[in-house]
Length: 248
Image (spheres, rainbow, N blue to C red):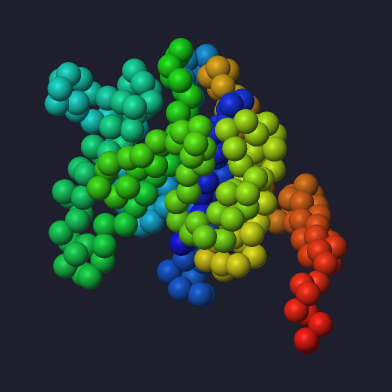
């Protein structure tokens, strides 16, 4: 299990992903799920993955090594595709290619081809964009009306995003809200765990403004967790009791 979120606001893009993978309660490992591909000044692309780790690694290897585009006859990688939409199509082709190789064998063993991707970034003077790719290789895109996308275990962090995120939110606030969303998931789901990786891309800068790992020794994240817990307790205590509470 995992939790990754991408938040696209007017000032830029925030992507956050945990690192926990496990094959049982006594076999927990850490692998990076949020990856940065950049040529500063020319392009910056972030990829977050959820699902089967071996499938994710195979897809990432393919988009690094290159895949033939049947329409142009060119070998495409994340470092030469002309637009973010072309990058989404490239990853979709990689996912379908991995399915062709491994899908039947997985199904023979009762396993599903389970992989999802968040793809965000900016290439040249093209718009900053954020996509959610499904296991089949098709995608949806974030919009000003739907400025965040999630993969993995979304339900614990989603209410916070629904209440607090809009396209007009400042990018620093988007990062803070995203971290609160991640903390809520960490608190409620043991299959999501520290460390967590964060990537922040400011619109038009064409390089990562922040690419950072938060572990259990991170003072800011510990302070955020404590402040959020106290704020929640103070909020519910400040709300008047319902009138029918007199019956209790």
